[in-house]
Image 1 (cartoon, rainbow, N blue to C red):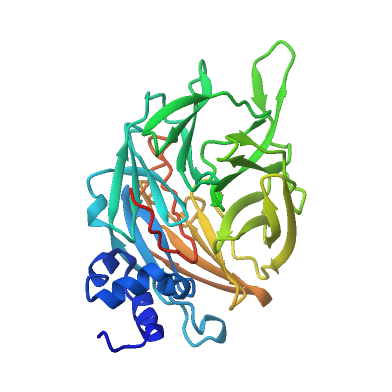
Image 2: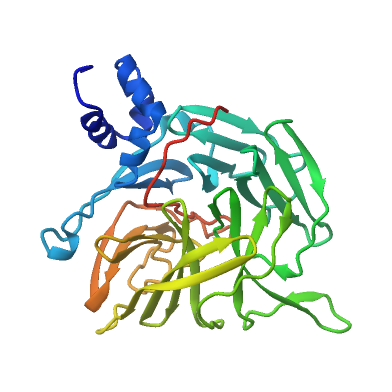
Length: 378
C-alpha cells in the first residue's frame, strides 16, 4: 500500500467513513503522513457528508448526488451510521466549527466536544444549569484558541458566559446585544466566528420587553477574538412572520441563506462576509408548480447546497405534513429542490417526536456539505 500514489490514497480516504479514519490512518506511515499534510483535506471537500441526530444520538451521514439532475437515479439513500463512541450522552443539539462538533446534553448538565477525525472527546461541565432555553456557539479567536459562548434566559436572569479551552474555565461576559436571538435557531460558524439570525426587540411602555415577529430578521455575528457582537448585517430580501428564513454553511468560506414564501424558494450565498460586512449573490430561485406542500421547518431542519448540480438538499421533520397521523413519531425526510421545478424526497428513518411533550427539545439535524477534518487536539 505504501507504493500507491498520494492522489490515489486521497481518493481512497474520501470513500472511508469519517468515523473509521482513526483506524485507517494506522495502515502505514505514508498514509498517516499524507493525512497530516492536508492531501485528504482537499479531497474530502468533494464529498457530501455531515452529522445528524436520531433518537437523541449522533449519527454520521454521507451521500452521493452524482447524476441526480440527469435522472440517472431517483435518490441515493444516505448512509447513516450511529456513532458508538458518543452513546454515553443523549444529545439535544449539535454544532460544528472547523471540523469539531459540540454536542449539547439533553439535560443541559454537560457538553461534549468531539473531533471525528482524531477520535478525541472532551467533556465540559457548564458553570451553572439554568434551563432549557440556553443556547451555545462554538468558535475560535485569531490565535486559533477555541471558545464556547453560552446564553441563558430564565425570565429573571439573562446573560452570557464564555468557556476558554486553553484555561479550561468559564467566565461571565459583559455583552448585551440590542436584539433578540431565538434559542431554537441554528447558528453557523464561519472562519472562527458564529453567525445568528436575529430580530428586533421593542419595549412596550409599562410592560416587559417583548419580541415582535413581524419585524424583519437580520444577521448578527459574534467575534470570538474581540468577544463582542458585531453590527447588524442585512439579508438580501425583506421577510415577515409568514416567511421562512434559515442559514447554512457553504464549504468553509461562505454562508447561504434560505428564503421561502409558500411555493417560492430563494437561496442566496455570500460573496463577502466578516463580522462587520456582508454582500450576497443569488444561487437558486424556484417557483414550485404544481405546489408540493413542503414547508421547511426552520426550528428543526437544515440544508446545504450542491454547487455542481445546482440543487439544494433539505433535511426536515414531517411535523407540518397533514398526512401524518401518528404525532408521537417524527420521520426526518430529505428533499432535493432545483431549477425548473425539480423536486425529489426520501424518508430517512423513524425517530421520536421530541417536540411533544416538551416543546423545548427539538431534534435539529445538522448537515453540512464538505466536512474538513481537523487536527485540533482536545
